[in-house]
Length: 487
Ligand code: ATP
Ligand code: MG
Image 1: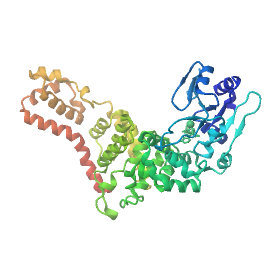
Image 2: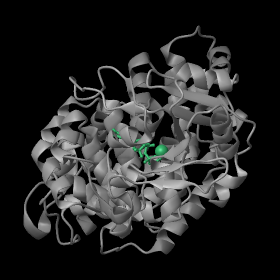
Image 3: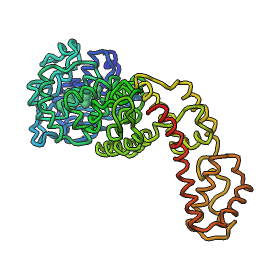
Image 4: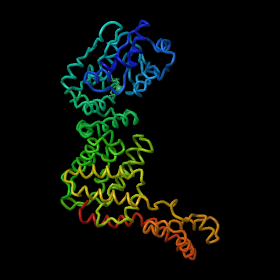
């Protein structure tokens, strides 16, 4: 309550009250205040119509078609910079199972509460100029807060048929608040889960992201699977259910994906790392060869990266998020055995992954390792590689950092622009990666002269080999390690 007394919430509410309208805090913020949690955002509802709200607050915008007006304040708190005021509304008819067909304003806050999803989200605090705030709880929200229960307002089957996303919201709040889902509400989810097919990918993505950003991300995804929701969100993950691994794993593919996510959540890692942790072995069901203790999953990271790209693209995640997650998944098998990794190997890893992603890749590997339930590699090995990476990160790793460029090649060989320039640069880059000491102008100029003697097809072949060998050198050691550990 302290918060409200001090903040812009109070000023804004008082302005509504003084103009003769009602003002109620509603939804998530009331729930969070009663739970002693910090509200994520503040929602005010009123019987004033959008035009009337705008008259009271000249510095406001009518933001959408749902009766919400955003009032600008000069608060430093980002959550209070724009305060959203929404006119009391009735539940609209949902012929498309997503959007109310029309929006109808209501006269009382009680009517507005009746259209909300769960009892704990359907309480209001009525503000007043001269009396203490009054809690309005027509659906037993307080009781369900105490009993830690997510329960639909009214008939759960009707409510999920109106808007199927509410089924995912039930699971999200369960994970976020550490609640359970009430029996009838859960039964209605099982019955109507197929309606998720009508929900837009964007809404599903947002609710899914919120679920995996909770501290009980694992419990959330597990519940999605138990209730049949996951099949409509990431069916590719469901393929890992019951797929055993080999003598080096105690968990099935699905369990291991979840345990890795759990670690990422407990460590408060970013959305990208959590997504990568959850999806990192998504290629295993398709790459499994053999059964029992000797089963193998060669190349699962490449297959997995491709599957993850499809999953994230389908859910309309941004290009940045998608690219980062695929890169992390594709590279998650990197070798970090100090006896095997050379400086050149570390340099190649850094070049493939990029300095901006290397820390995240280590975090993913940590989640993978702990999520296996039988962490085999010692953390000191990972530290050793980190140290190596740091050491080599000052060495040349991109074409830009080589001491000669395309212009030098053209001048030295007296040739016009063309594919030969690119081929020679690729060969030199590979040589410099192998031995940074060769990155000297004079030495490289000599090499240009020598390479200039080769015919087009020879040069092209060498360049192709140079480009591939960065990947292959890594693959060769990986093969050896794989044989040793059956990963
Ligand atoms: P948080 O902000 O912590 O994610 P929240 O409860 O505020 O939780 P929002 O998604 O911000 O969740 O929604 C605000 C309120 O609007 C909810 O508390 C609920 O009362 C209502 N609400 C939101 N989405 C729906 C929906 N799909 N169906 C019915 N009511 C909804
Ligand atoms: Mg909210």
